[in-house]
Image 1 (cartoon, rainbow, N blue to C red):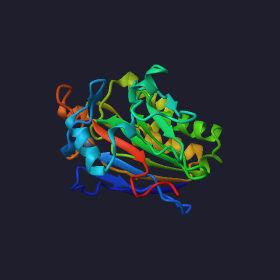
Image 2 (cartoon, protein in one colour; image 1 turned 60 degrees about the horizontal axis):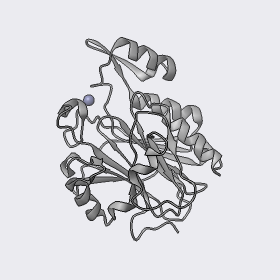
Image 3 (cartoon, protein in one colour; image 1 turned 120 degrees about the horizontal axis):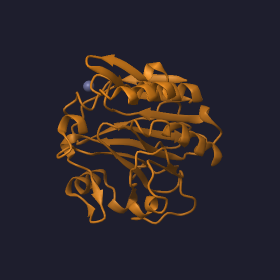
Amino acid sequence: MDLHRIGLAPGSAGWLRFSFPGKAAGASEPAALLSLRSAGDMGFDRAGPGPGRERLLRGLGLEAGAVLGLELTHSRRVLFPAGPIEQGSLLDLAAAGGGADGLILGRDSGLFASVTVADCMPIWILDRSTGAYGVLHSGWKGTGILEEAVGLLGRRGGSGPGAISAILGPAIGSCCYAVPRERAESFASEFGPESVAKGPGGPRLDLRSANLSIARRLGLGSLLSIEACTCCEPGLGSFRREGPASFTRMLALAGHLPGEAAA
Ligand SMILES: [Zn+2]
């Protein structure tokens, strides 16, 4: 596996853009985007997008209806809708199956996949053999969703893990993620000893190490790791740092920006 690690570059526009690692096949690449804390909370409910989300999408030149989201449930469930998808079918897509934490779209869908995160890890994924792309929400309960997504891409026409390029986004680091001992023990037994770190006062989870070891075991073609802790970095939204009453959900998006449509 071809692995690149980078730090967080400052973003001035309210969002960051990352490039999928590995060699592009010539066609234009989907964008992997993450809103910053300065862009505001990206929560969405049936009443519609909030002002922060509307402003962000307008700045990117996107229609709110072109961005598909999910009712997140901290599961490992990934949706890859077959056939045409109606714009604006945001929450209904996931409600049909009781929620999901990952969404993959076909190369020519013309739509954006999205999840919101605030300490959980956003993982962007691209199958270079089919052009299918998507984004996953990977917290401690949902760790392993990367493997589900890779399996699904294979069953839906992909040529296997070697063709997959993924980006592990900013997430709460082991510096800040103290957890109860039982949770740490079950995490370590499933994802290996490197997925748990020792810290003052008890064990800490390392979501990044857990996902790196999953990616290595699967044999992904290329991986980019954005090595930043959401809880340490004030420019990012963090449930732990900001607290349950006022945390900032960041929007992680995958899709072809206007003017960069899939060729
Ligand atoms: Zn930290």
